[in-house]
Image 1 (cartoon, rainbow, N blue to C red):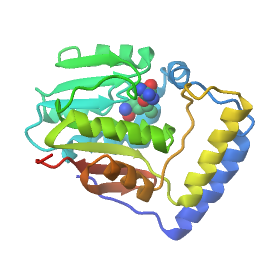
Image 2 (tube, rainbow, N blue to C red):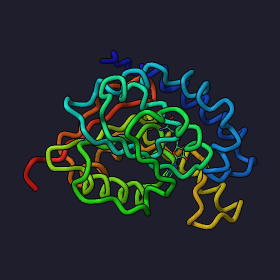
Image 3 (tube, protein in one colour):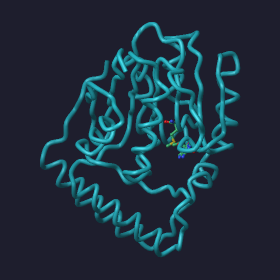
Length: 245
Ligand SMILES: C[S@@+](CC[C@H](N)C(=O)[O-])C[C@H]1O[C@@H](n2cnc3c(N)ncnc32)[C@H](O)[C@@H]1O
């Protein structure tokens, strides 16, 4: 298991000053459509992500229970988080869903010897079978969506996990209400400036505070929603679906 490190108040204040400067620099740049964003960066995507979250990718499987037969990974991308999952659970059947063909093409080449179902789709729309999976995972994919969209995916995840199963999320969580508010303001500004229709996904980070994130996960019906690890803005959250529904 990973050891957590919470930020001090001074670190949060410094982080917020730097974030606001960065948002100001970025303000006039047009928003990028989600799939285009990842296609353009496929060459160095894994190095950048491993540079930021190597420990979390290596240890994410520690947060799962044994045995694990079936796992849904939403926004699986190139499957960086799946290396540790397959190391610990070589026979697990994984379903990976992602919008980006480019990311999934890279994933396909990596785990050809594993039992994996790869689906190119929008996870908000793709129909998920009720009570199919032992567990579900999302790794650094849900911080691009607003409240109502996130609620929708948590509701779907709750339904597709079997009773007694659980959901693990590793994601970017806002340090404070101000971070949530300034990121959301920039997101709305760029959508408006670019006249981007509501149904087009854009790659802009809009993390929620932990309180808001937990509220949405609980609204879906999950119990025992706990932060198992945190390091700066990265948290690993585990939420459980009770045995009796
Ligand atoms: C930052 S990457 C994370 C990929 C992988 N989980 C990892 O940690 O390396 C976010 C991924 O989420 C995918 N994604 C974003 N919105 C999506 C949606 N609505 N449906 C399916 N995939 C989505 C993107 O295409 C991208 O591959």
